[in-house]
Image (tube, rainbow, N blue to C red; front, side):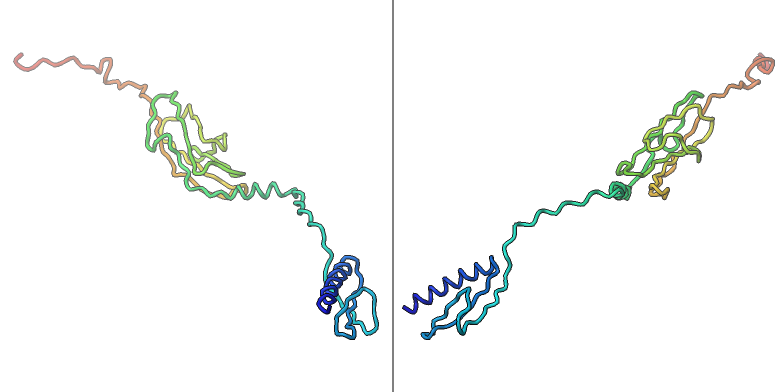
Length: 199
């Protein structure tokens, strides 16, 4: 009998706890003359109030919504790209010391970098210290160059104009055929062969 009452009491206690948790009711505990513990949501003589600490179940919190992109977010991403580090920058054509002949000779300048130009970085190429008009390009065609020695170099700058890498300079020559004849090779300067003595 006591076991049945005790189990009934536990069942009532569980129900009362669940109700008090969901409805916010108070639970009271007391023992009868036989020492059996009872639980109820209504106070009884000699009952002790039980404070139940708990929280009502809540639905799953919604997934956080990413904040709207700030106006500078795109620029920040671009800035991150501009932090590219270049392992190399070289002028692979023409070869250093190469010669070109004729007044109408065209010289093709070809560059390469590792990695390729990225973000807001700028690729500038100079001929004899003067900036060529097309920037951020890996190919240039030069023509009508003066006779003599010329030097080409390239540089990659960041958006603020700070140098990131510079190529080794490449030197090439423009050679033109001589248009002035030696006067000793024509006219009166040319002497007829002299007869040999005793001939």
